[in-house]
Amino acid sequence: MRVFLNAIIIQILLSAYIYWRGWQALPDKKYIKIPYAAIYIIELIVYFLGFFSSGGGVLPFDALHDFAWVGTTWMIFIIYMSGLLLIYDLFKYIDRKKKIFPVSIDLRSKKSRLIYFVSCLVIVISSMLYGNYRFYHPIVTEMDLTVEKHSPKVKNLRIVVATDVHAGYLIDKEIISMYVDKIMEQKPDIILLVGDVIDYDLKSLQEQHMETEFLRLKAPYGVYASTGNHEYIATYEGEDEAKISWLSEKAGMTVLRDTTLLIDSAFYLVGREDDMCESRKSLPEIMKGVDKQLPIIVMNHEPHHLHEEMEAGADIALYGHTHNGQFFPVNTIMKVSSMIYNTGLISEQMKLRSMYEIPFGYKKKGDTHVYVSSGLGLAGPQYRIGTISEIVVLNVNFNK
Image (cartoon, rainbow, N blue to C red):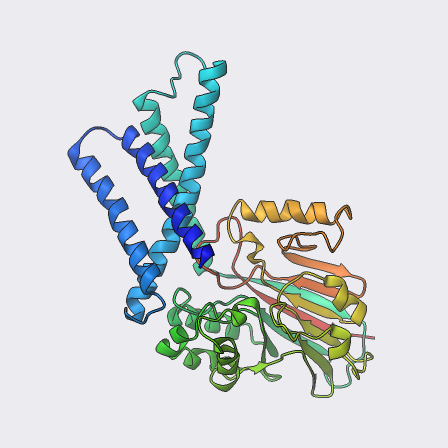
């Protein structure tokens, strides 16, 4: 609840700041300022209606979907707009103290404010339109990997990986249908969904009969899922287990929860519980009795301790969770944090949860092929600004 209250306070403060700066910049015309004020009033009403009615079952799904979209879109808008306007105010303050601009440039004039405010609107709206396009057009990242092990029955394996689908009110049935189509277009031998298949609550999936889309996922060696942190987010007691049960009983997936599975006597698939699971087992405990002469693929949602998979003898380790920051500048912050962490100056015990050895992409760690996906869906705003939505296709050759 504290997190949500903080979100409301930030929403109100940033909206008020942008509103006031726009009001100062715009011409003093009623036909301009009245619609301008109305936009802010309507947005706040929609935001609070969606916020306070989302968990009560008061509003129908379509209304909640629209309110969630407006609220999260506005959140991205105010983050970017307030950032750009703060830059203006900072330079205005410096210029007042140090006179860094020529006399011809007066940052306190109404004309300068108007030009800058309109320019900010153009930049932010253009970036958001592009980011929304990137979200609705996932790319396929295809890689060829060689595992130096003998598999008696399978020589080549086409693995299709999707992480962070986040099915729910925002990633609705229509979007899931598009995801399923795109996954099946890749002609997978096996499909792996590495955590956060469900967003926040189960009700939104049940109302849309989302299982009809997930049941279209088919592959010769099966469809498998591991848990993510969102599977353990519950709005009522027991919802986390209900969400995981829904994936296996309704959506037709085999959910591997700290489980090792030998597939066709040819290779092992290991699914780890998310870090949020209190009974999570260690990887050596899960892999007890595994024949390490055969190829081993591990699904582990959060990429915090990559050395565990490497030390356990995994040949391929698949992760998600980070979204690669989802939008600029978070992706850049994560990249810099990764560089700092990889210097070795910060110990594993001292690192922040937001620090990752690999926030996104591929790395060969020992004999282990590691891939951290940027994710297919999103948690919250449907914008990929500086990042991608992706499906990962691994063409694996078992060769010894």
